[in-house]
Image 1 (spheres, rainbow, N blue to C red):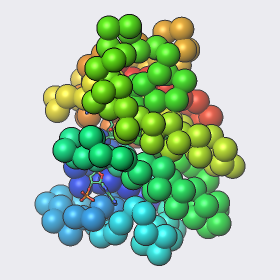
Image 2 (cartoon, helix red, strand yellow; image 1 turned 90 degrees about the vertical axis):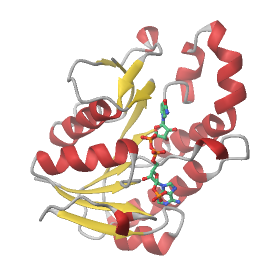
Image 3 (cartoon, helix red, strand yellow; image 1 turned 180 degrees about the vertical axis):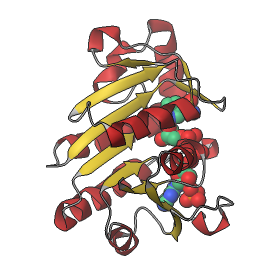
Length: 211
Ligand SMILES: NC(=O)c1ccc[n+]([C@@H]2O[C@H](COP(=O)([O-])OP(=O)(O)OC[C@H]3O[C@@H](n4cnc5c(N)ncnc54)[C@H](OP(=O)(O)O)[C@@H]3O)[C@@H](O)[C@H]2O)c1
């Protein structure tokens, strides 16, 4: 069983990943600024309050960790201002992992990040850029930093997220020619991530996940 650090564990995909990893028998260190308010309770769970852009917080959180899941997000109201969270946090995390010898990183970005931008349908391109452009420019920088690292990484690019239950019926699109948008629940994204903790079949790959 692995000791997993989930960065961005208090909500969304990070919270679902925390629950799924605990259910799979892993030990989880759940990291977020509001980690102290998490209501989950499990003998294998440690809540760790910290800021992902603070190098001291991140270095402490990496102690004894086998696998890092980076599942950061910004609130919708911040999408119309410059976004730096993804690249800033990654510029802190990657060197810290390299220094401490924590090798495995599973990072959530999104469909439309990096080379999947070209797979966005023509009609969606303009609205996507208008609403998510700043965040996805920063996710591009996040992905680039991870690709340049010496880590064993997987980039997880879900389509449009829903809050539904895990179904286990989702598609993992590894080939750029197959990349497309679609709905997927955060719980299914978490199921994929925990699968990659157990069986790292997509190291060095960027995958698109849709239901
Ligand atoms: N919505 C969609 O349809 C969609 C589609 C594709 C991809 N995505 C991407 O999927 C990712 C996850 O989204 P989500 O909606 O599941 O998550 P979310 O609800 O946005 O949760 C974000 C998490 O990041 C943490 N966080 C934010 N800033 C932090 C900081 N400085 N230090 C530590 N933790 C921090 C938050 O906790 P605290 O605030 O407590 O720190 C929270 O736990 C995002 O990157 C999003 O862009 C979304």
